[in-house]
Image (cartoon, rainbow, N blue to C red; front, side, top):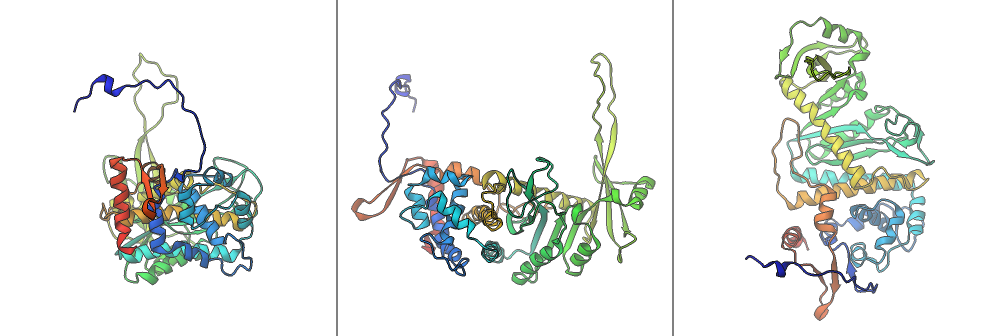
Length: 458
């Protein structure tokens, strides 16, 4: 229907008078979706079980504090002091099962009271949530990516150290090691470390534990692992091979003069496409016991011209080669091995989402255990976002060469703008609790889709 110009435009010169009253208004009506998910999996009860060993029994239990931190990160807030901006929100209170939210000082004291056993139990809970999803999916192939990520802090915090920090040189930091599942884009486990350790420092036991967890729930599935050159060692390669894990690991070939000689003396390279070419060799460093399949890859790239540019003259492009080497025990073609190994770049996207949407890189306290709990709360918020979408939507992909996630996940920031950050009013007409929102048909359709999935479990 075509409307007249007069029916569309209106005068808006008057600024309304501002009043602040308790109207049971919420800025986060979409949290009702996560309320349904939390109720279905019993998250509040599981979190309470992680802290039963603590003798202190405050009014706000430690499990409630961690649940509040998780919701805090789902809402998109970063600093603990930002809790003041939703202090009286009725939807947040209902999600936590509270009449009043704790203040910032209470949350800070609770984080300071955490201990290593609390961290271990919370880490186990986060891991079990991911493993339960993997068991439910019954996948025939699980791909694990291992890498570390720097968490910088501008002040002193227990357990931090000055180490490699490309963006903020000289700052103290943590350097946790992550294991992510490529098929679901979730963090299976995280091992907290100071910032002055190498990527592979103590990584063998962590990798072995993650593999063991997958084998325990899916003993017949194919397990794959992808790692960068920091993990290249005889111990890790031999361990993965003995465990029957299919792997690709980048090789720091600049450390081995023999590899440099193999590349320089190679005359015939087999083409993968117009850019990539390769050759293979069964090789081992002199200190290793066994030989493995090494795939040597080069790509032809245009070199940057750094001289003065003369627009009236023709300057031909100069081309050079970039090289990389992959060690693998996989038996498929070099082209598929390269695509599989390059797929590990998706883990950097997971790290970016964790840092930008769940504030993983924030260090809130001076106590190590409190910072570990905050990190695990960020991981839990990320994993719950992925779990929500896996519960409510069918898979959009089959297994690809790069092992892309089986769902086309929306980032938490997108879900926050579309669903969570919706104004609403809680009322009780005829003594029936009702959440009223604006009549937006798109929001209504998507919100009801999520809620309909959880109705049978209600």
